[in-house]
Length: 413
Image (tube, rainbow, N blue to C red; front, side, top):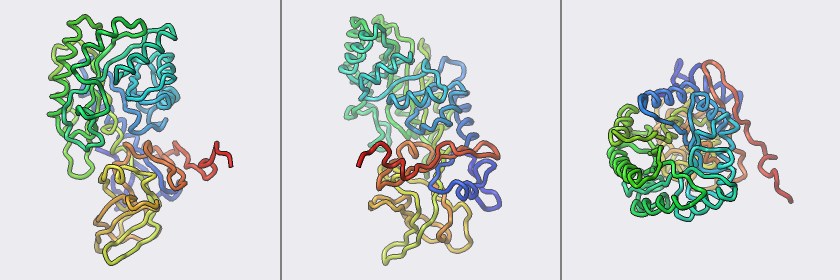
C-alpha cells in the first residue's frame, strides 16, 4: 500500500499535488510519503509482536535524516554499513544501542567510532575482521559485542548482484568455519560473542529460501549455545521485496510466519534489517520532459532525470513504473524514457506505453524510495536531486538541491 494516488486525474502524494511540488521545488526531486513509511513500519512491527524483536532499518536503502528520524521516533533500530551511516543515525536521534554494523570492509577507525558509541553489535564477516575488532577493542580497553555473519549457501532467487547468501558471495563466513571462529573468540580479550547473523539477499519474493536459511542458522545458534557461547541475539537480515511490475512478494504476516516458525523454542532476541520493504514504494522521483525524439527504430522522451539520479535501471535493468503526473488525452504510444547522461545505459524505461507528452510535462518514476537517492551521484557534473517529505496536506524540503558550487567544493584548481 502507498499514498500516491490520483485526484481528478492528476497524481498526488497524500494531500499534496505532485504537480505543485514539481513546480515549486523543481526537478529532479525525490518525494516521500510519511504515511506510507510509518504504516509499513507499524504493520511489520505488529507482525512480529509477541516475541523479543528489534527492527533495524537498513540505512543504505534511503538515508535522509528526516526519514531516519521518523523511524527513530517509532523506536526503530538501524542497520549501518559505514561510519557515515552511523553519523546520520546519531544526527537523526537514533539510539546507538539499537545499531548493528554490517559490511565486509569496515576500517579500524570505523570500528573504533562505533565501539565508542556503544552500538548493539558488529556483524563480522571474516576471520581477519574478527582479529581487527579484537585489536581495536583491546586498544580502547573495551570488549566489542559481535555476531558472525554466516553464509548458508542458499539461493535467494533474486538478481545476481543482490544475492548475498551463496558460497560464491563475498559476504559472510562459511558455516563450517563459524564454530571454530566463535571458539577462538572466547580466547580473545577484546571480544564478546553476542549473536549470530545471516542475510541471503535483497528483493526476496519467495519465503522458501528464507525458511531454509533461517532453519540452518537456528540449528547453528543452538549448537553454539551448547558449546557455551553466551549468545542472546539472532540477526536474520532483511531483503523482503516489493512490487515493481508483476512481482508478488509475500505479505508481512506471511513473511513473519516464515521467519518465526523455524525459531520456535529458541531463546534469542530476533533482529531484522528491513529496508526496501519500508521505503521502496514510499518514494517517487519527479522528472520533467525536455524533448521528444523519433528515429527510424525508436521513439524517445528525454527527461531531466538520469542514471546519476536513479541508478537502478542502468545497474540492475530494474523496472520502475513511469506515470505522467497529469495525463493528457490521446492515443498511447511506446516510447523509451531516457535521461541526459552521456551513456547508452541511461534509460529509465524501455518501450513504455504512455499517453501524449510535451516538453514541460512532469513524470513520476514510481517505487523509487529504496536505493534511489542513496545511490545518486554527480556523474557528468550533475547536481544531485532535492528531497521532499510530504505529511498530510503539507510538504517540506528535507534536502536542498545541490548547486554547481557544491560540485567542486573542496577541490583546488
